Length: 391
Image 1 (cartoon, helix red, strand yellow):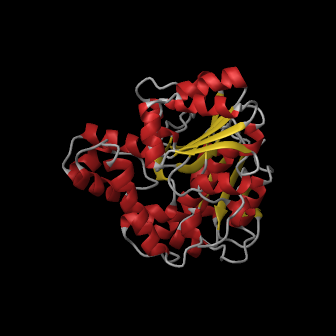
Image 2 (cartoon, helix red, strand yellow):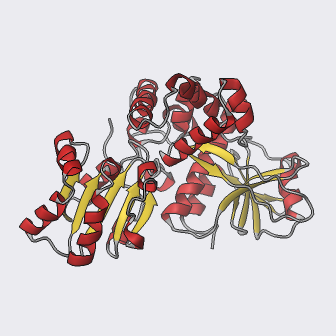
């Protein structure tokens, strides 16, 4: 395991104003962030992974208010780790925010339980932010680990995996834990063998348009079950949908969303394939997924109001990513971009909707081709995170 990597997520900034739900898949680094970057600020810390504490709190959630009263805590920070293990605590949290002006950091790896059963989500008194896997500002200058696509595709970007000497073993364990703890323990499906097969197929169709019917046929379950299982992946933050952009007029757009796993390493482990070589279809797919992950994290961390979408016409012209109407982005794993790679961007540009158009690729230097900017991938990420590409 490597050292702690400081994170780009602006948690301290939010906590100055109000309480915060910090959500993220397992091992994205929520607990490490709290221990390393908030330890001097925490007045009380509860970890609901502690079985004894969890049983006591489930039996009597008012224990939180009692401990706060005994310690006479006011106008301070309290952290509750894995809040989804006891959502009933949120009524007590709500009360303490109102009566004692306490700010809470509430972490969790699943939004499912917090969205079900009429749980008190604090009525807007807490913001929500997702902790993503590692992103460009956090790792591009690390000397201990090579910042290359090969390394990213091999280990993925979960901190413990990125720094691991044995990412294949660790990623396999991660997938096993997800199945057994996030799915089996929460009893969201009784068909674990079929769900395991679903995960493999979902990973094989990663970055493609959702097709519940085809996936259901491959597994031998109902279309409704497949739709529910995709919802589980989204609720447990293991994946996300990319909605389609449909405001084009000259060319009719397809209205089906795409689906991406939250991490490349996890998607590769589910597919049970080796690190893809340059020039292969898998390499191009993972390259597209990597840019998707970076764009999503950037928009979340900066609270940018532009929506991330993609566009595909009924004539199969496609642009991989759109940020609001500011920037249209095509991703190509090629080391040499030519006019043939501009087909989708050319078609979209005729709609006269977007301010700028670019290709992210493996060329060595930025340049312009037919008024479309060609970005080497590292340079693109540098400019993105510096705020130079999006208003």
